[in-house]
Image 1 (tube, rainbow over the protein chains, first blue to last red):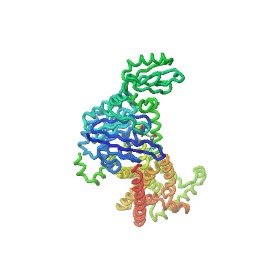
Image 2 (spheres, each protein chain N blue to C red):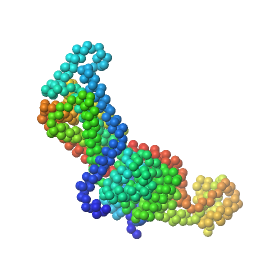
Image 3 (spheres, protein in one colour):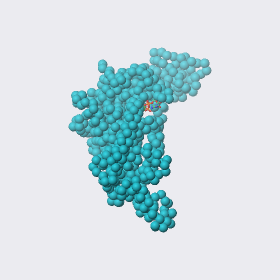
Image 4 (cartoon, chains in turn cyan, orange):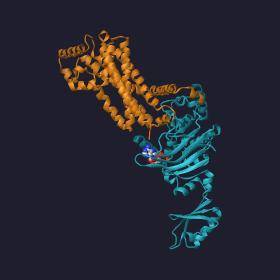
Length: 335
Length: 300
Ligand SMILES: Nc1ncnc2c1ncn2[C@@H]1O[C@H](COP(=O)(O)OP(=O)(O)OP(=O)(O)O)[C@@H](O)[C@H]1O
Ligand SMILES: [Mg+2]
C-alpha cells in the first residue's frame, strides 16, 4: 500500500511554550479518508498546518506525497489542497473570480480552468451564484465554494480542517455528500479533522483520536468500536459499602471483561450488555449497594473517545462554536 | 497539466502570479467604489478648504474671525506677498496657490494609497486569505510584489482623479513637456512603491494590526505637514525645512509641480534631483522590504 502521508514523532511547541503536538506518528494510505478526531485545542489544526507547510514542526518528520514538508515545501504545495477551518473565500470577489484566482495560482491554463470551474460550480450547486460577490453567500455556500477552489487543481491529497464547523445539520449532511462524491469521482486522498463523532464515523476509513497533542487511538471506526470489547454498562450507585472492593462486587468473569469506577459510576465492559445487565443489578443489590440508575451503551466513537481520554468529547465541547469564534479573533490579533 | 508546468519557465510563472494577484487587488478595489470615494475625500477637503479659501481671501493660516476684521487692502497685501514668495520660489512662473496645492494633493493621495497597501496585506492575513496563498506553490515574493504594484496603480489612478477634479475648479496646468511629465509619473510610481514596501515591511514585522493602524496614523498627517505639499519650504521654520528635506513626499510634490505647473520655467536639474532622491528612497525601502519579507513569510 502506498503511503501518502508519513508522520514520525512530530512535535510542535509554539513560542510561549504551548505544546500543541506532542510526538505524534501516523501514516495515511493512498486513496483513503483519514480523520483526526479530537476536542478543542487538541492540536488538529496545528497538525494540518505542518502537513500543508504553513508552519514548521519543532521536531520530527513529516512526508506528504513522499516529499519532506520542510525541505521540499514547494513540491508538497504542488500536490495538496487545503480547505481551512476559517473559510477564506475572498468576499470582495465573485465566486467565479475566486476560482479564477485560485486556478492561476496553480498555473492551470485559462481554458482548462474555465471548464473545470464550470463543472465544479455545477457539482457544488453554485452555478447560479457564480457571478454574485461571495459576501452574499451563506455559510454553506462559502464552504462549498472553498471546496470547489481546493479541488480546482486536482490535488492528490486534500486536507479538510473541520469542513462542517458552524454549519447546521442539513448543510452538514450535504457537505458529507459532496465529500463522498469527490472521493468516488477523483483519485484523491482525504485528510480531515473534526470534532463531530458521526462525521468521523460515517466518512472515514480510519480515525485517529487526538487529545492534548497526542494520538490516543487509531484504527477504522469499526476496529475502534470493537476494541471496546462489546457493550458498556454504566451503573450509578449511592455509595460502595465500607471495605468492599470493586472486584468483589462485580468479579471479572466470562461475561464481565473490565470494571472501572469513575466517581460514583461503575463502568463495566461486557460482551453482551442485555444479558449481563440484570445479573449485575441483582448481584449489586444483594450485596447491599443501592443502584440509582443504569445505562446500557452500545459501542460508538463517543464511547471510544471516553475510553481513551476519560471524558466525553461533548463535555469538552461546551458551545464549541462560541469558543472557536472568540479564539479565532484572538489568534488573529496575536499574529 | 504537469507537462505544462514544466514547459513554463519559473520566471514566466512568477510574472503570471504577480499579474493575477495584482488584478485581484484591483478588482477588490473596484468592487468597493465607496472605499475609493472615501480615500479621495480627505485630499479633496484639503483642496476645498485650504486651496480655495486661500485664493479667495489671500490669507494663509489666519483664523477666519480675524480674517473678517481685516481691511481688504491688508488681505490683498498679504496675497501679493505670498504670491511674491511663490514666484520667487519658482522663478518667473505664475503659480497660484490653488494649483500649487492641488498638485501637492496628487502626491498626498499617492502617500495614502501607499500606506493602504500594508492594510490590504494585513486584512488578507486576518481573514486567512494569506494562508491560502501560502499553501499554493507560488513564489512568496509574488505576494508582496503584487500588493505593492496594486497600491501603485491605485496611487496613479487616484492622483489622476484628483487632477481631473481640480481642473474645473481652477487648476492651471502649464505642462513642461513630455519627458518631464514621464519623469514626474516615474517619480510618483517610485514614491508609491517605496511607501507601499515600507508599509508591507511594517505589517510583516508588526504582526498585530492595531500596531499597524497606529503607525499609519502616526505617519500620514506628519508626513503631509512636514513637506511642501501645503506650504513652500521657504515659508517654513528652519527646523521644519530640515525635516521636510528628508521627506520623500517633498520631492514627489516638487517633481509633479515642475512637470505640470512650471511650463517653460521647469528646471531640468530639479527634476533630475527629485527623481534621483526618489529612486534612492525606493531602492533602500525595497531592499529592506525584500529582506523583511524573506525573513517573516517563512513562518516558524
Ligand atoms: N499560533 C499559535 N500560537 C500559540 N499557540 C497556539 C497557536 N495556534 C494554536 N495554539 C495552541 O495550540 C493548541 C492546539 O491548537 P489547535 O488549533 O491545533 O487545536 P485544534 O485541535 O485545531 O482545536 P480546534 O478544534 O479548536 O480548532 C491550543 O492550545 C492552541 O491554543
Ligand atoms: Mg482547529
